[in-house]
Each structure stands twice: as structure tokens, then as C-alpha cells.
Image (cartoon, rainbow, N blue to C red; front, top):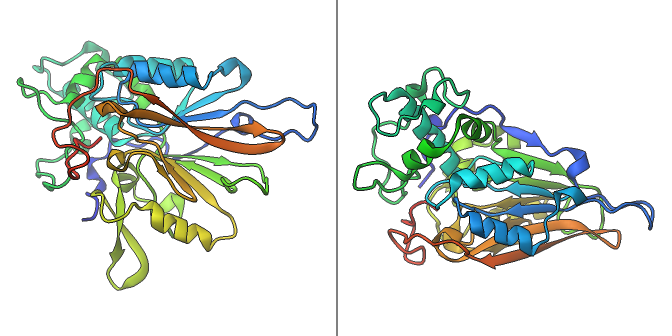
Length: 337
């Protein structure tokens, strides 16, 4: 089943952002030269603040030594402390990409701002750059989503308020503006090191990319929602992104495509908690279900002995997990984690 149309996307200010060169680990040409900091790329946090602190502690994250934090989206929503996760990311000068839950929270914030009698209407949202002049045009429509694809806004509470509305109501104008400014794609040009398995380019997105399509032409909705691919009718090399898990992850076709290219690109992503940690030749999936009491995962990229190396680090969930509506092991109705 193809992904939904892009009319539910909150206005995008930056589609692709390039990571500054000074933040990218770079082997020194001198044995005694300075060692650059590391990139610490963390999977879906979902407001699980204690777990985020735990993984940063485990990797001995130190901004003062040049370490740089990157978050693969879904920093917020459903977990206990979305606001603190954003605050920590801002304090550390972290990079991040927009996930489907950031998108849902931003849309919810726009809705709250235009519903004056809403019990969640916070004065802090008024005049925020995160809220478009005509937010109704960018809010989800009334059409029911396909039953196999869960609603990223989260289940409604007994008061009829979704988790996205609840999350939006506690975020400040400054926090919402930070979320609204996140790119959909973060790109890093890596130094040419023959022994590095990461290739020439590192891409961070929330959910995935369609092989054979230029970054600039990727579908924004698919970038935040896809989990698998279906073959395009009449085109054996063409693919359509799908939100359901399918028989295999989209990364399998991504690997096959990369094997045919001279310049390799590795993608680091989240979103697909049903498959947990994914490690393929040219992709690493970091959503390992921390929200549901499983691990929080990270990729640490750094320089050792003049070479670029990367390793996957995990910590057990340190927060109180939520109970999924349907177990991730049972199907695609996982609450859209």
C-alpha cells in the first residue's frame, strides 16, 4: 500500500540540510594531529528523557570535545517528557530531522492555535513562526486513514484529546519553532577513506528513501512514513514507498541499488520499531522500540588510528514504557511508533 499523499505535511522550511564540515569526523594527516569529535546518532526517543540521558552517558558524550548529537526524528510524542528532550537537544546544539511525530505535533499545535475554546489552547503558541498563517490548509483532512496504517497523532484519551495535542500543549513557542525548522534530510559528505564502510555520503532521515530517486525529488510524506517498497506497475526498476512493513524493509532494495553505484551512500533512519535494530550493508535502522520498554539505540561515528569507524550502542529503556495498542510483533498496528 503506497504512502498517503503529502497534503498532511506541516509547512517545510528546509528540505535538505548539509552538516557543517567542522562537525564531521576527519582523520588527521598527522599522527600527532588533533582528533576530531564524534557523531552520535540516536534513534527514536519519543520523549523518553531518562533513556536519552542514559545513552549519552554510556557513550561519554562530550560537546566540549567536539562530539555532535544527531536525532533521527520522533524526539517527541507519547513518552513522558517531550519538552525536556527538545531542551536538551537545543542545549547541546544537536541536529535532527523531522519525523512523523514532529509533523503531527506541529499540526496539532496549529489546530490548538485556531481553536480558541480548546482546553489546550496555550497563549505561547500565538504568533509562533511554527504556526502558518492559514493552518487549516495544512491540517489533516477528515478522510479516514487506511485501517492498516496507525494514526501518528496517537490514540485519543478519555477526553478525546490525542497524544499529539497533549504534547503540543506543553511545548513553548521556542520549542515549536525549533521543531518546525528541522529538515527532512540531513546530509554529510564524509572524507574519502578506503577502509570506511560508510561510503562517501551519510544521510539521516526519519523513515526512509526510495532508491533510484534523487534526494531533491524524494516524496516528503514517504521520507517520514515509509517502511517498505512495492514495485511500480510496468517498471521493474521503479518502486513506490509503502507505510506497512511488507515482506522486507526498503533497505534491501537500497543495498542492491548502492552495490551498482561507484559512490556509496549510507542511510541512518528510525521509524520501523517492528523490525527493531536494522543493520544492512548501506543502512542502519535505529528505532529499537524504547517507547515500549525495549532498547534505545545509537550509532557512534569517530576516528580511530587514522580510520573512520562506527559502532552501534544500546541501552535498556530507563523510562516507564507505554503499552502498544497492538504488539509490534503481531502486525503493523503498532501505534505508529
